Each structure stands twice: as C-alpha cells, then as structure tokens.
Length: 298
Image (tube, rainbow, N blue to C red; front, side, top):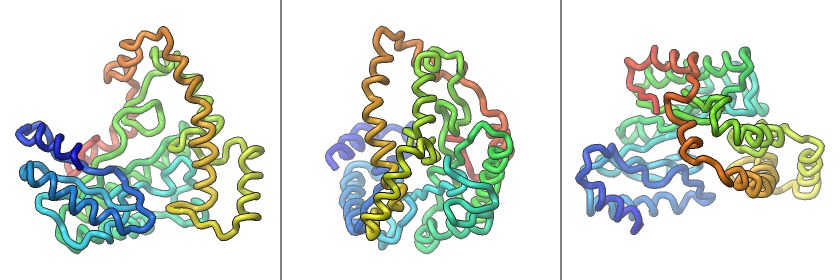
C-alpha cells in the first residue's frame, strides 16, 4: 500500500499517465482477500490522487469479479480473456481443447461470464489482456487468427474496449518479435529452443514435452493423490507448473545468466527496438482492420 501511495504522489499531476493498474492477476484461493484489499488500496490512492483512472483486476487471473460489491469512483474493472483453444496447448478451433468444446458461442459465454460485474454495475467493459499464442504452423495459426477475429467481433457487439497482449516478444504472440539474426537471438536463441524442447516456458509450453519424464509423475499423482484439487488449475497443470516451470526453469537460471558474461548489453537491448524487430504481418493487418472500433494495440 505504501508503494502505491508513493506512486500516486509522484504521478498525480502527470497527464502522460493514463491510470494505475494496482495488482495484476491476483489469485486468492479463498476469494475473501482480494475485495477488502482493494477497498483499502483504492482508498489510499484516492486520498492522494483523484484524477487518474484506477484499473482493478479480478480474482483468478482477472476472470472473476464476484468479490466486489460496488464500483469505485473513476475505476475500470479489467478482465483478461485468453481463449483456452488459443493457448500454446490449444486444440483445433472450433473444436476440443482439454476435453472442452470451444467455438464462437463458447468464447462469448466465457466473455459474458467474466464481465458480468461490469455490466451489472454499469462500469466500462475493458479487456485488459487477450490474444492467442502462435505456433509457426500455417494451418494452426490460421485457426488462432479466427479465434482473435471472433473475439474482436464479440467485443464490438458488447461495446468492450480492449488491449491485446502483447506488443513485443521473442516469437510467441507479439505484434513484432526479435529477428533471428539479432544479437539477442544469436546469443540466447539456443536457450529459447531449449525452453521449448523441455516445456520450461509456462506461456509457450504445450505441457506435452518430455513425456518420458513428466507422464510418470502425473500417473503417480493420480494414483497416490486422487483427491488433490489445487487452486486454480487441475492437478496436471499444477504438477507441470512445479516440475517444468519452477524446478527445470530454476535449474536453467545459471546457464541463462552465464550468457550475459561479456555481452554487449546495449546491442542486446537494441535487438528489441522496433526497427530491428520482425513484424507479424497477418496479426498487424487483422488488428489494423479493426481499429475503427474501441480497441487499442498494446
């Protein structure tokens, strides 16, 4: 709270600042902490700065706003609306992903559920994050673009503003991404490939990598801990988080850190400059064709 009071005091007179996103994607298993915490935090910021917009994320990664009983002044409740079939592990679209059928109707039903509080409270509907992960396979990626197009149609129909995730990255879903011959990718490209091979990157992993290692763990958990019900995901997803995205990722840290030894840091940073990045043309063109509506390209 004291940190946000310091931010508010510093930026209260800055018109360049659009607003404050107080806490990104909280995940409170009880659902009883997020609401009272924001009551105190919003009040503390508002005691200093009443002019800037406050963005509030819902519980369970900004998908659930049921713990809020009322809106705050000059506040936007920002939902995140990633489509199950648009994730790295996503299946065909329309089609099944992890046993769940996903089509346009399912996308709209999910969106309406995630924005129920906004519609009932009369606050602006803002999708602060959404966007598929791309695979490099033309047929699969075309389905991802169809997901994106359907989501944009849904947002237009319900007068929802939006900000796509993400602007730049190393090739998963950004509007632009680092070039293969950039200093960063020449130095770290092998590690990016290693992360993909082992499923270490939680955002880019299909969680199907190295089955000879991970599947026996899943079988053991199902056999020995059948009643385990972790929050917020399934036992399988939680085990993957612990094994791939924490244990193996932590083991990779020294190797990653070593690549910075004697590196030209300015050249690495310049690899992410817009002029050096590769444009994901299909994505940019799709979004550009829709920019007459309420959205912005993050």
